[in-house]
View 1 (spheres, one colour):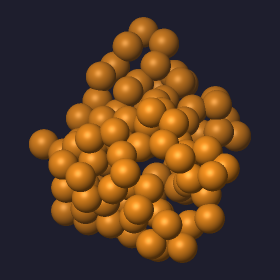
View 2 (cartoon, helix red, strand yellow; view 1 turned 30 degrees about the vertical axis):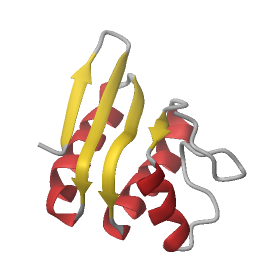
View 3 (cartoon, one colour; view 1 turned 90 degrees about the horizontal axis):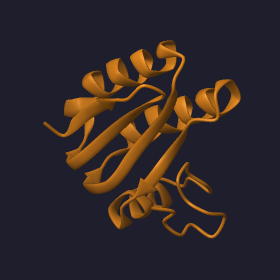
Length: 105
């Protein structure tokens, strides 16, 4: 499964691996919403994402903005594929990357 979650006492760690495309958007959205309502800090690991599409980028960016306002949650690491997809889609910045677009994972 491209999307999974590890629930810890104080945080949720959502991992996306392999081809993270529209086909797993519903699963990712469900986990993100559960993480938001859990009241725990949420971390999203994209370091093993080999492919990511615009649908997932938009979902992650929207949730990233909401969680940063609510609980300081963040994308904890991104793959080169995710950075390239974000740049290719025209995102000037993306959660989990520094201002220069470098991977923070």
